[in-house]
Image (cartoon, rainbow, N blue to C red; front, top):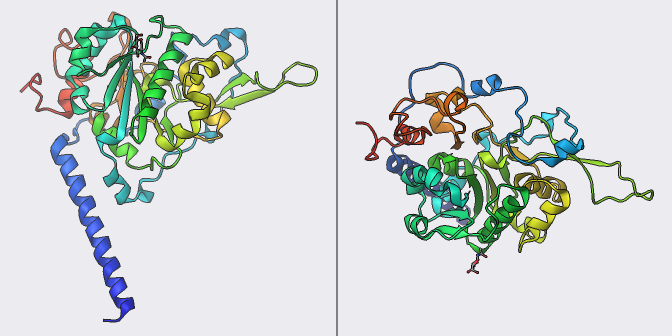
Length: 367
Ligand SMILES: *[C@@H]1O[C@H](CO)[C@@H](O)[C@H](O)[C@H]1NC(C)=O
């Protein structure tokens, strides 16, 4: 055999091996997670709910003070959003590399919500990512410290729901991720259900060694604010800056490569200073650092869902394809997933019914 021939045979063998490995691990992942078959009911496409969502989603109850200061100018220009990768361009080798142990999952919570919000998370999706998930709160709580296997971090931040307290927690979340050896930083709220297999398969499409900021905006236009940095000679600032941000309530993920680039502006508590300087909430500040300071783009990932969206429009058969879900309100104003399953008195958030739909073998699921 000539040496050129030998090299070619070697390459063919390597390629074959890689393909086998990819096929095997995909099979294993699906086997172990026992994904349910797609529901045959319903007929419209996965993006249908979005078209039926309100045209302009409000900021909800969060304290966006720029709005009341009249400094927020909205412009409609979704073309600036970076579109997700075409699945055809995705290499199978990358898919193999994302496992749950590559991901740092951070959940922001507060002492008042430990009982009412964490219980359902601990029963459901947390069981699929016990080692990787950390809860960031504002008090010492021995009961939940134990129930999370010591994964409840007291940030020592204030327990109020104001900008400063939220930025303080995000700052601790970010620093804790940097100290870990994980490849992805994924932030969620305590009213999110995280579909772990879908989170992993989504992250598998992107390399953590490249700069990625994955999430979904809650407004249909980039945020436009006055640039407080720029000083003109007259001292009057007329320059605006525009950027997209992923809404924190839907969850977002940042690759390690990008987090390291954010580090000079965001690590060691500096994140709080940036929040204070631009006077915007934590999730907006993340967008500001990535899009404005670092000039990297948010990759629009529609599978993240916050309670600002109507949950009932996500069709049951499309549930396995979504990364996050949420809930809010009570009674007539309730915003929850429309899903069959457990009695709403037992499962008011519908997260247990959702979990049973995705993973029917859990003990609390109807047989
Ligand atoms: C919060 O304060 C306690 C007690 O001073 C300290 O042990 C702990 O490390 C602090 N937590 C953080 C995240 O700084």
